[in-house]
Length: 201
Image (cartoon, rainbow, N blue to C red; front, top):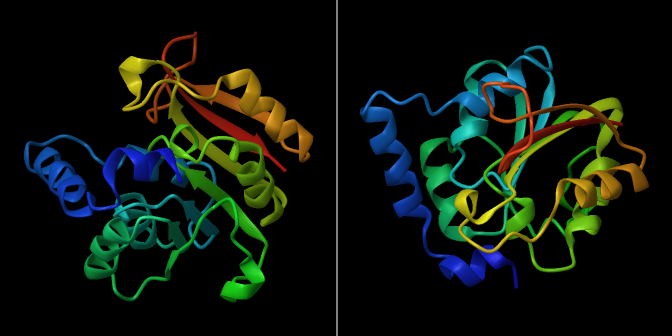
């Protein structure tokens, strides 16, 4: 079972969406991840939102002209995404076991994004497998972007994956580090409890 399901029971979609809606109403920018992605690949590029949750990032990217696919294991989160954007492709998938061919999804994505602490919230021991499966659907030269917390202050669970471990998983499947930032606003990473990593296939 994923750490996310252990934490939430797979029923938190509506509450999660409400929290971000409240932030948006308060004037807070809730589109940092989408803006970050849009600076990496041009409009029209194919983007896989891995661990898409309620679709906040993917819906924004679709509005900006990207060709998006969303995947998540949590049915309650996907239900929110499907209500908000019924015309977009959403798949309930375990990232550690998904088979693109069986879903009718062609490989060759320009960008895979895993925002929202996807890697620390995977089922224990599946991190390397998920990196491998996500890397496999990138086109040559495609990018994988993952942002996640590294300490208890930035995570809802105890830390489970370090940056050296993540980089090792990426290197093992032919991904090369391009850059690393401290935030989705592209502040430089100088250590600290959160990192956004960009790797290229």
